[in-house]
Image (tube, rainbow, N blue to C red; front, side):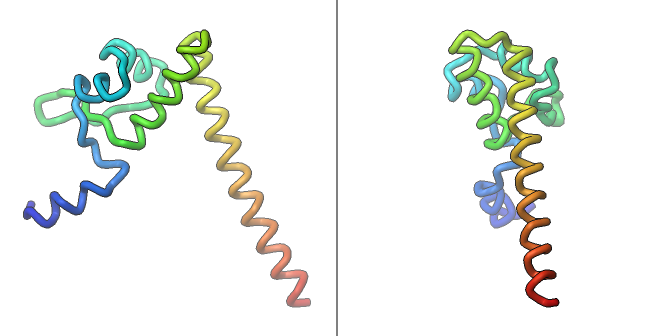
Length: 110
C-alpha cells in the first residue's frame, strides 16, 4: 500500500480506523458499551490482524446514537432495536421516493 492509498482512506466513512479504546474515548463511553453493541448486532467491528476490534466513523455515529438513547434511559437492547428500525425506515423512504420519481417520469412520457 502506498502513502497515497493510505491518505485516500482518511475520507472513507467505512474504513476501520479507530481502536476500541480510541472509539470509547471519542464517544465518552467504555469498551464494554461497544462490546454490548456488538453483542446486540448493532455494529460489527472489523478485526485487525492481531484480532483487535477496529471501528469506522460510520459505526461510531451509530454507537453515538445508541449512547444518546441509553443516556435518556432506554435499555441498550431497545436502543439497538430503535436504531435498526430507524435505519430500515430511512431505507424504505429512500426506495419509495425513487419509485415516485420513476412513476412521475413514466406518467410524463405517456
